[in-house]
Length: 126
Length: 144
Image (cartoon, rainbow over all chains, first blue to last red; front, side, top):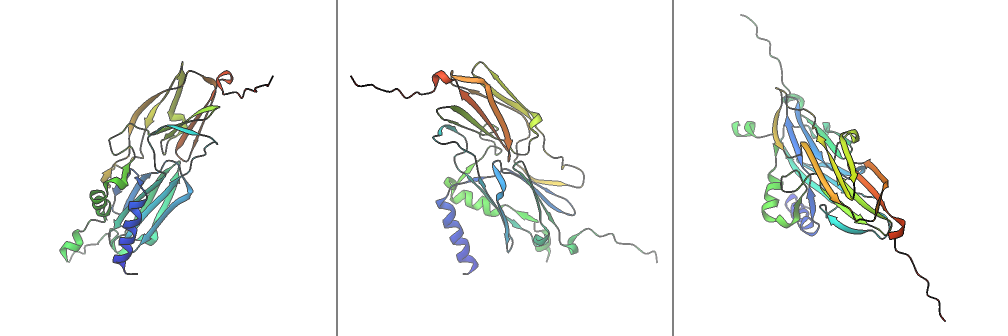
């Protein structure tokens, strides 16, 4: 399948299932980029992070233990899927991504490729 | 190529475009400003009232839970990891930071003594039993 078709297919899927957009903070340093993503209700097993070419996709399913015969009486959260995609710049090293999930808060560290890391250049005095 | 060098390491274009074309598909969670924090779901069963607060990355010690009469109030302060030193720039800050408080009116018939609260995967689940005398009872009809 061509990339274009894949993208179209992905978009069609999106319109069928309503998703929640997780609130995200993004910080940049010389070494790379750090994302903090709020995914309350998402356990480690229900979280998918993948990089396809330069698209980073974060997808998680909210899993709540619910008793039998439970009747919802008030709901701020009506969907149970979080999804968000980001485009990574080419200087980032997608193979070096580190993810940490603690109480529904995801921290993703994406380093810059070695050749884009800051370098100290020594100046010789002639 | 200069333009290539200036390219941001990160772009939100995908989301931004999608939200223009498919606004319906993008229902937001609090943090983007339009609703109270933290978001809450409430369910009831015959035996209990169950409140779920979606509040990621907290230390449970920083959350205050009080039931007074039939009002359940949840308050606290959310501090985010301090990434704002000289070296770092911020592209985007959507996550909620600061103090929050939400008050929920419970049905009269709850038994506050029996409240259980568990914090797991960033969701605080508060379960409050209904008083026994208000729980539905099956009544047997005897034929004469």
